[in-house]
Length: 304
Image (cartoon, rainbow, N blue to C red; front, side):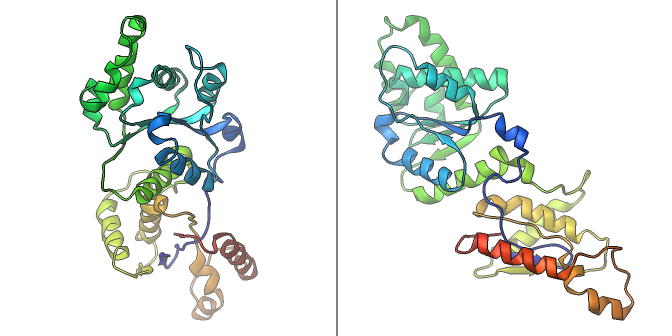
């Protein structure tokens, strides 16, 4: 647990999607749609990713039915259309499935016409092999009957190229899979599914990047769980704290920014010194109650 002191900072709780407006949430049936090749990743990577997303409270669609027929089902098309984000898990045999390729085409249509967010996971395949249908990935694509599916080959190739150019997460053998999945879930929660939870830092921040890097370097020190930012009022301490918070909150299961805690905790002492205080400083009893609620929610979790 790490926290910044003085005028604004601390860690506590906010799980996956509390900040999105109700109207925005109700527009979607699912937060995330997973497109994957069952024989490659159903019982390992994709299953673990799905479980981790659900643990974070992110409503995720995964197709557990075996594919039948020549076309993807209407229910699957509906699930894609009603998802806020689609994640395509490219694996060695993804392109050997016409259902996966039709899913991909539909996902990219939703990206173009509905503004759906799309991210790709390159699971033990190179993005360039997906883009150009080369290597083992290209060999899998070549197993499709090109005569039978001649009317679809060009659109599938175009879809693979477009998807390979999207931002995504490459995974190679030897990487810790659990850590990789946590990074995906954290970034997805913070920057794609729930970007509205980011704090407003400043309209035109100047020089803040170097300050953020300095504070983050201190937080990287082993076992360091607190950094204080000291100085007179109005020099940007809270602004720096907010920027640091935004930059790393996706790495934690829960996060909360408590502003004006300094005034709350030190009201009596500051009054004796004659310092000016906010016209309506927060009530200390209320703050204690909030702390108790936050502690109950985040107990046992990795928090920021």
